[in-house]
Image 1 (cartoon, rainbow, N blue to C red):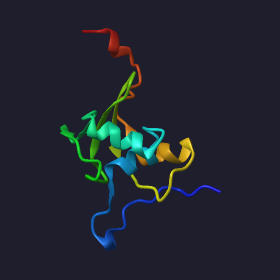
Image 2 (tube, one colour):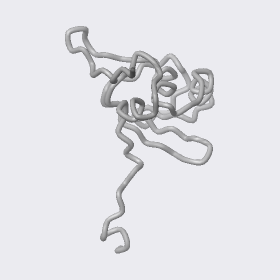
Image 3 (cartoon, rainbow, N blue to C red):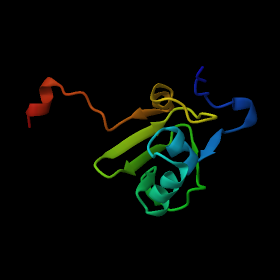
Length: 109
């Protein structure tokens, strides 16, 4: 039984979550310690700025640029989770801005 990600609760003010926890829940790292290492190693940008504090809060709408070993992912935060779930649930936490469908105009200059 999986829990769906939850959108921010407007009555409680702006919802936020620790950056390392969010990266782990979104399955950008295998462990929370690895997620924290990504941040402290300055492999993560938050809205274009390099971040080195895993405790930094992210809010809905923030854009994260994550430099992984073989890929760079650009993600817009859409929701938060209460626990780490399967890939299908994690995929609902963000919009992958680095994925761009190929179109007929891509070959033209």
